Length: 582
Image (cartoon, rainbow, N blue to C red; front, side, top):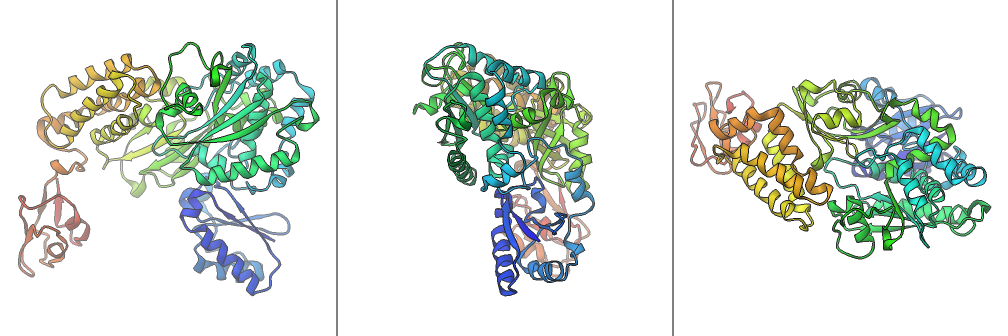
């Protein structure tokens, strides 16, 4: 038998290290010769900490939400007694979260130890790289990627082969291949999980891409807020060099290629490739005019290719199974699979990998189980601050680059923030615009000042101070910011506002003209009152921080609106549904 503990960031945050320590303590106390190991996130973040037990026939038993107090029973019953503890095993909807997915990028995450190159090699790791370097030409590599139909997974889905070929045909004394791991969208954690769970797959993709375009150096630009990802990348790089997979004469092919890590400071604008290059060169992360494109003049003015983590993680699979096999997944114009990070008001939050072309309903309801507490589904924000909100009536929209863009949102890197009936769409737009306003590099006046002006209007509206003409002014500013900004940050910053006005204009109008928040979440527009259900238990009185609630024991209570700060504590503690929020 062997025991594997999930130690991605989500598992560690849920207490996986304490669980692992307890497992090792009890195994030692019982003098049991059972191998223990760690792995990354399998995608079921909502079930962490996860402990997998493999029997002698390699049959998997997956235990979920394993806290230290549960370990003794699992070891006593399963390890010693050879009888699985059924009540702790994954089952039902939880299990279908995994079985309904199609995994290519995430195929090894949660399965292998990301800190042990031997485990990666044992499942066929680096065989694709050997095949490419020994048997294929640069053009054959690029043509295979072209057959696959792989589009860049960082946002726009631009054909990967085209970028590789552009870097190949442009001459220079040095060429560079860069991995953009500066994942900055709120609610997105796809790249982080891949780097933590399967770093060698990303290295393989970079080696193959570097060969195809003639690069000798690779750089992984990873935000410093991902310490575990950086740690495991450093381990993977060291192990790959020791094996001769990086450095001089890799795989005995006569080709020199190495990779290094650059930790970024977490600037959202550095997700834009020219701003990223500026940061790599030690400059402030600010976009540059294009053309010239990075494939012509990129890092240190040499031909440079940039793809994101997920794009590279597909490459070794493509060369193991063939571009045609990869193209069987997805639909025309959107081939392969896509990883999405599900967050927000969703029952099962985590990572989902599905074939392109499936619908939003398939992901949100069929795989992820629908809305938490069975509330009404209201919409989903896709593409983060650069994307937009897709309303409930478009739940059957296929997930392709074309169809999602037509809604006003974008697929982006793959973040999905799910919203229910209690989400105020005006406040949601305010949240994302506040993010992009803060992250603007300030180079373009329209982006620097325009987003601030839009944010000021949204803040007034959510505070009950909206006025006639605000919606029209928001629309006017949005179009000018999109047209007057140099890079994708400014060009897409108004999208959350535009889509919420397009699909939820009634909420804007309610805020402005009725001074009412439809979702009853904007504090300035909420009123708390007490109805006849009040029993006079005084619990609300004792919980009120401003002494706004008065009344006698077992008598009717009232709320002084001049003192009420709309904190909601009274509603939280009331056991008789006597507090009305409206």
